[in-house]
Image (cartoon, rainbow, N blue to C red; front, side, top):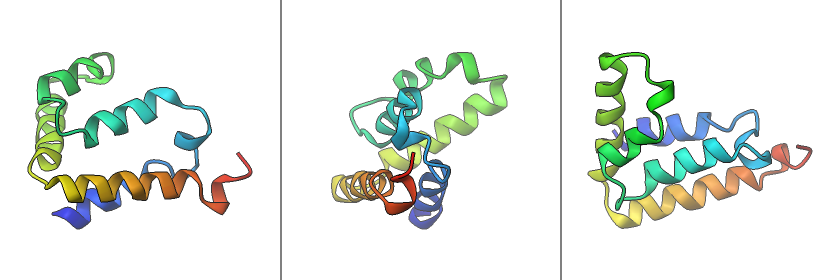
Length: 93
């Protein structure tokens, strides 16, 4: 499960938008990784992008995957995201 989560997060900034000025995406990633943010708080920031109950339930499960991780794992994910933002591929953005 950890591998799936890491792959999903690593796919988000592939086009380097996250590290090049999309503050909303960066905030969403930070809230996803932050263990102090509850599922309800996480969904509050995404309300305008949730088309229905099915998507809401999927996002709850997605956030719960992160809540189930250790602080060390979450810290490593944050380091990985920072490395992606600072990568050579994103330097031109």
